[in-house]
Amino acid sequence: MTEVITLSQFLTTANTQFQVYDMGRRVQPIDLAAFHQIESLATPYPYPIQGHAQLALVFWRQTQAPYIWFLKLPLDEQGLLAPAPRSQFIRMVLEALGQDPTQQLSQEQQERLAANPFNFTPSQEKLALFNALVRKQLGQQASPQYEFAVQYLSGQVPASAWQHLGLQGLADVCVRRDEFDHLGPIMTGLELAAPEVQIALCQCLEHLSLDASLAQKIAAGFEQATPQNKLYYLRALASRPELARVAIASLAEQARLDADALIAIAARNWTALEDDACRLNYLEALALQPQGFFNQIFADIVAIPGLRGQLLADIRNPERSSQLSNAIGGLFKATTA
Image (cartoon, rainbow, N blue to C red; front, top):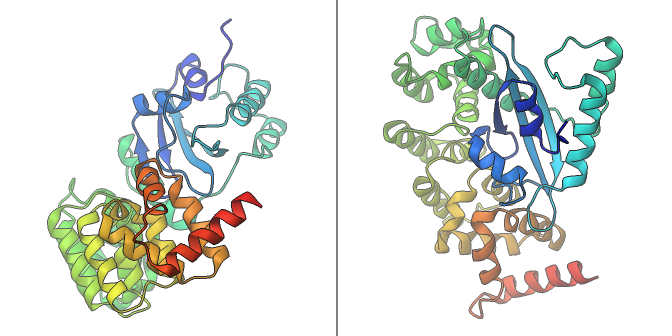
């Protein structure tokens, strides 16, 4: 039998269909051809976070419920999957399951797999959006919370009834917004619903690709939001970097690119940093933070393949400010110590 060395190979050998999702920065599917390139170590992981790939593997056979693995796998200095930990996980799976990942597990097997060091639990917000995406992909019904969420956003129940809403229901509505013409109710909710619901909608939409009208509604919401809620709207613009840049520039002008804003941008709006002016604003604000914070955030974003070349050029830019120069000097000292 051919040695199984990749997750794709194992799932294919077991005659399953599967889909891979990134669960680190945004909940989003990874094209299977791209995942094969990642697993063959031909290309770096596109969405690294804190030196790891955070993945969800969903696999199934016809007529069977899907199985899900949440995996946090370390990356090497080039952003490639570290082969040894992945091989260790595959060995653990083979020992527990043999060649069939969909077989019924004994209690002992379940405990053995659950105890593997690569498991992680996504946040509640990410889990809700992920569940909604998987249900839609597999042609399953939305959650039981879905109908009430539709009624609430459509104005069929009082706005004050928001406490009866479930985050899963809102995620289902957002994921199925085009399928069942929910775009209007979502936009109305972003304007008229209780602030808690508006925030929850933003937390769902930050993982999805927004059409122009919805993106403009969120951009307007950013301008009108209270200072403590602005970052929810900024994160919701993750799929629209051109609008995120305007929001980031607004925060910079108001000297509000604080630690929370810098973390939010790194986590969700990193594509906005591909613009030179936006990235400079970001780095200058980052340089005002304590050295340890600067080092941690810079190390996180420089690992993103789409930003790495630009950020490495930025730290050699002779026209950078003295504040940024000092922060970069501190970074070099920490990495060579």
